[in-house]
Image (cartoon, rainbow, N blue to C red; front, side, top):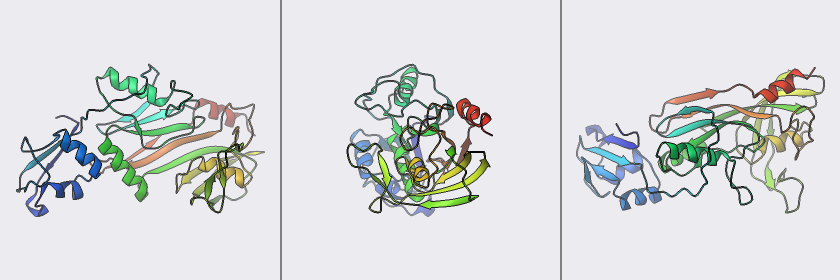
Length: 298
């Protein structure tokens, strides 16, 4: 069976009248994606191309070909990938610290996008790079990549509904006294020319971070953190604001001789597989440089 095919068989109890109802209730997708699929004749009923005003009958077999004519402008590069999981819709990749997720104008190579694009080309797959979440260049851990526009939209809906869960481990400066806590402080962009990119600001967007102390050291604390919202640099901004910046953070804290980047690792995630709705969960261990950092603390 082609993994790029979405399949739905009309059930007598569904009481669906028109094909368009399938794309509202059973295989939900945006109007823009539906229009693209129709234009490329990717939607078929019982093997025949059909318009969305087609009147369905029980037992009709609807197939949607997710293979789209897409042009990926990202430069493919043979960079090793640590693929934790892959299926027809998603990839879960363990990104190392020091690698950006996506190219920017000043740097078009050496990113996760370059590596994934090469990986797909080696398998004769033409896809756009669609990250579901992003990690800062200096943060290691799990990044979710959608393999189609349909999967990306499904995961975006999960994000809005709070169904994608992420947990981080961080070594922060100073000793955090509370065993656990919640930081509820809005975050906004800073003015151009500022030394930092984000800051706590009453006019900012809501941002909530939960934390639990895993271990205390003489002048550092290992925290487990959970994001209730997903603002840019949220953990780094929140921890810095309460006086416990992430160790080694060159922007919101200070550099450290024990690690070359902020000691922040996205080590756990859980979400629903967009096609089957099965709950998936993944956890990876701390990278070696963070393990070394912890070994040097007392």
